[in-house]
Amino acid sequence: MDRKTRARKLRKSAAFAAAALAFFVRLPALRADDAAFLESAGGKIRGLLQEHAKSRTEELKRAKEEADAAPVAVVLYETNDIHGHLDGAPMLATLLKSETRPHLWIDSGDWFQGTPEGNMTKGDAVIAILNKLGAAASELGNHDYDYGEENVRRLAAEAHFPILGSNIESAGRIVDYVTPYFIKEVVPHVKIGFFGLLTQDMPNLAFPQNIAGLNFDDGAATARKMVSELRRRGATVVVASTHLGIEQYGGKSYGGSKGDLSVANGAPGIDVILGGHTHTKMTQPVVVTGPGRAPTMITQTQGFLEAAYRVVLWVDPKTGALVRDEGELIPLDPARYPPDPDVQKMVDDDKKAVAAAMDRVLGSASEDILRGSGASESVMGDWLTDILRRKGGTDLGVVNTFGIRGDLHRGPVTFGDVYQVIPFDNRLARVEIAGSELRKLIEKNLGKDTIYLQCSGADIVYDLSAPQGRRLKSLKVGGAPVDDARIYTMTSMDFTVVAGMTFAGIQKKIVEISPILIRDLLVEEVRKHSPVSAGLDGRLAPAPAR
Image (cartoon, rainbow, N blue to C red; front, side):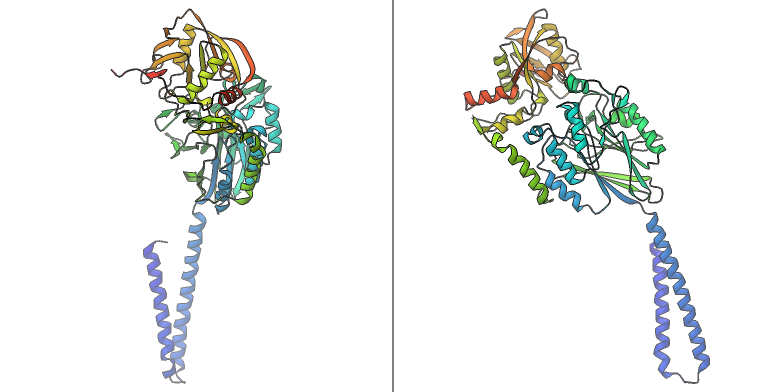
């Protein structure tokens, strides 16, 4: 009802009240035998009452129709890339409990790999938290296969929620421990269809033995099938939980060409993509649209349970169709969301279970040894690759920049500190590589705004603003220009040379994969050479400006 109509109704009601009051004020002065007047006045009052009642009934009916037609809110909360970091779980529990509207929490994979409590329980600690907080579903991440497929199967059996993975197949069939899709009627007439996608890059992101016999189908092609099937089964809203990554965001390229943007463009009909994998802190969601199609919203957090994404779906209560949506990144700030005591106890108990080993002091650092932003040479990268080169007795030491997951800070260094630097059970690997292939390796890992490897034994001059394939300006090993025909020796991590993207497409000979854990080398370094220190020496240097 508009403002003018409401005002007119109020004036009419006021006139009715005034007329009735005037009649009753005059009543004591009337003659008892003035029956004609009484009958006339009574008829007028009855008429006024009947007219007012009819008007009020119509007004209430219209108000109800307007309320029934107004969009209703259904809220989705997303987390991704927890990697065993559970400190934010008590705040997330409070956030979820404070939500008064119908809501679901979805996680987009990489549950446990990255902390002692995650790794040492092989994911049990994180699945317990997901169960406790009532996760509605979770997509698998690449690191969830780090202990092999049987561990994934075991965790899926422990989960009280569906594990998604619509494009994970074995022998031509979707694996039996995932749910390809499901539909949930959150409120009457609103049927939300969910499906999940795991990155096609799995052969480059996992050890071959951990994914033996598995195929990871094209995300966009699988998405089109899922959208069609879910709509056919009555889904009024379609949501994808993905662990593909975003190709670019905020002017930064994250590499790859088959991420969430590809899926959104290649499979119209997805209303929301709850993404993961690239740890992209989306301060605003991405919206993909185009002629003749509905928009697709894409969200992702930076991971580690530092934040959650809240997506509000405004839907037509009669048809269940999506009217509009909105997304907001919610930092899990304890000042805003006081920790839930029950969940806090779970987290504390998990930490206590590994504290004896993690809190053991190994030595000290005389200064901060930091991994940096990934856009240049890093102090941690120099320190780590120097250790690898010395231990391997090789010309070069190389690591993937983003395989370094933690820093060391000035002061005492514990086993837990070293564990966070390399939380994966990577082993020392020795490789032989021709100078021509070494040049390709370095060039391949110089991105538009990112350097994907750290190196020891080489002096590299680069220009990231140059076109791809022409960014490497100078390369020396041992102070001498690289000889394309010479065979160089290199020490790295087994994952980096066997399965990672760093060496993809590069010809090399794996000479040895040692049983020695990289983490143990760092422990030995801190114990024997404390206080440890490191600094930049310009081994990775930008070309001088012209």
